[in-house]
Length: 134
Image 1 (tube, rainbow, N blue to C red):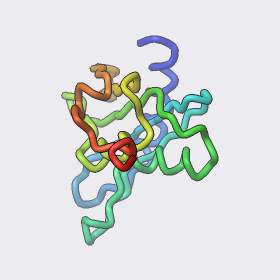
Image 2 (image 1 turned 90 degrees about the vertical axis):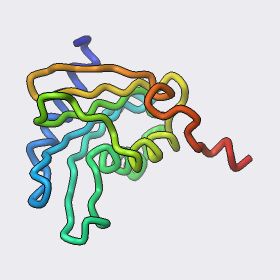
Image 3 (image 1 turned 45 degrees about the vertical axis):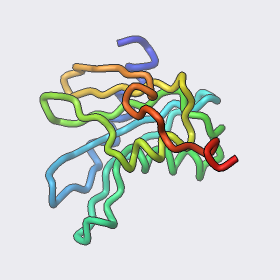
């Protein structure tokens, strides 16, 4: 891992410890690096209605936006306690697409630091973005 990945991993792991996942037992943490250099983290927060559940990636992104960060995501790191790192779900990919570009990098990791890296278009080709509304 490079220095940026280490910072994102540490922030995601810190958030992952706070996850509220009584239904799935899937404790997920995420960290996003915004274009202004700020890092925001989040954890998944499950809800008994399931539809009210919010994933770690979206929590981190919503925090970044609500705190006034520049709205371009440079990197995202998602960490889970699974042996094989989990990628962002479809809802999260769509939210990332709102604030990403073709240079945005997505890292998936497990708690042992096994990491896999993608360019965002690799995991969400032909994403629906604000450009479609022009």
